[in-house]
Image (cartoon, rainbow, N blue to C red; front, side):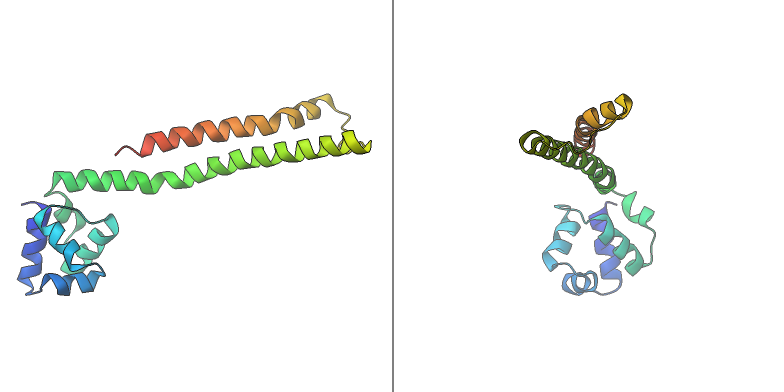
Length: 153
């Protein structure tokens, strides 16, 4: 029995219409109809709600339908990656911000004859010189890898 058949069976066992079920889980009647006919699948959040509503395990809903199981796996990957991608996007933006600050300070020093951020240590000078570019490269590359890795539809 696939997911749509199981959903319809559980709904009819309780004497509920598609509209009544849709209202209970806050979706449209058309969504319920598409799930029952196998034209579409619900999100993992809705599957959890259905599991609670019908008092059956998520496993009972998922295991019956290979395509739905694959969709849930893909959805979980898409839900998992944004945290890391956002982190590396922030690393990239931090590098960009530091680079802009560096150019602004350089411009101020050059045009106004000041010497802001004159550092005595050559090691620290190297860090200041290359950190923005390194952060931008690391952030951009890893963010791109995560985007390519998890969005495979």
